[in-house]
Length: 330
Ligand SMILES: NC(=O)c1ccc[n+]([C@@H]2O[C@H](COP(=O)([O-])OP(=O)(O)OC[C@H]3O[C@@H](n4cnc5c(N)ncnc54)[C@H](O)[C@@H]3O)[C@@H](O)[C@H]2O)c1
Ligand SMILES: O=c1ccn([C@@H]2O[C@H](COP(=O)(O)OP(=O)(O)O[C@H]3O[C@H](CO)[C@@H](O)[C@H](O)[C@H]3O)[C@@H](O)[C@H]2O)c(=O)[nH]1
Image (cartoon, rainbow, N blue to C red; front, side):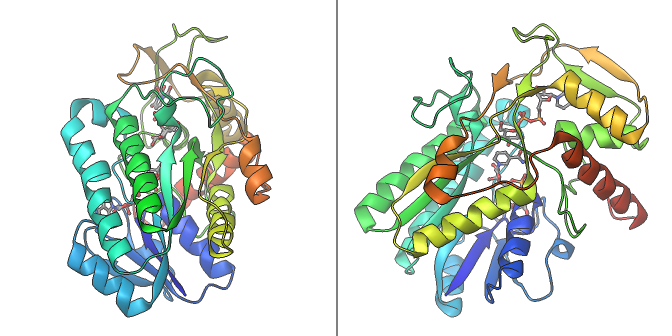
């Protein structure tokens, strides 16, 4: 039995690939168009099929040739403010292309799907930590594009007798503790990545988008989950599905929020660099606070995080950012 990982050359997908290889899964196939991913992020034993997830003949051929029973679907466009300026691009990438992929995968015999969803489906939740049962109410096109795919998957699974786990990731950060992968996108917009770049002098300053939110220090609160912990959540989800487990929708977070200003303090403290910070207006599409109700995934899948420590996450991110510079990559 083999696993197809779409977007496996990207940040989170590459950690899933490493987790599969580390756990002894011998056949891992990645489908990636390398639009934001890197072939060098993949270990040599992995098969890379370069192409688009919406290329149905390619998807069907890949699944049949490698005897794939399980699909982990990471490939997407992921930047919240970009989704506000280019909503139709996001609906195409995240909804329309996912529909094509799911159809081709089911048609070719895939039995299990793990889908990379997002905390953005909750929008500006009335309660934090957010339980999975809260009715989703996304406030940006990115969250809507992902929620529609959740719904398509749920309906298709019911109609065609397949099983799925939807994982709603909160803010993913950090890097492989062994230094094999990390966030490599040159123009990344994620807070911890950008802050480490500021600490290393790759950016002149860090902007704080909004200090007038209804939060304790006025900046936004997020729940930062370490990327290898998240990859492990996919492994236990895969085992659950292959063992005949029911379909599930689960939050992936630690259940604790940090403000933007707190994150910046940690990056300054870990790096020892007091880089310039500019207080700027709010960014389009940002909810003020989003923190995971984090119990269900532990109860359902027995997931036990190993890296629930913001200083550790920042230390990994900083080490990866330094290594990228040394390798003269990005
Ligand atoms: N990074 C986060 O904090 C976060 C939080 C919640 C959810 N997610 C979800 O996790 C998933 C992975 O995100 P990431 O941070 O690793 O992003 P990423 O941009 O690093 O990875 C996406 C990968 O998908 C590939 N790709 C994109 N469109 C494709 C297509 N049409 N066909 C084939 N390959 C394609 C890219 O080349 C890249 O390798 C996404 O679905 C994203 O929505 C991310
Ligand atoms: O230079 C920066 C970058 C970010 N922020 C703020 O930091 C917070 C986190 O932003 P960012 O790291 O860009 O992540 P989010 O916009 O919260 O979105 C991430 O987390 C979501 C889940 O919560 C995922 O769905 C998205 O894919 C992923 O990009 C937000 O308040 C931003 O306004 C800044 O103030 N300055």
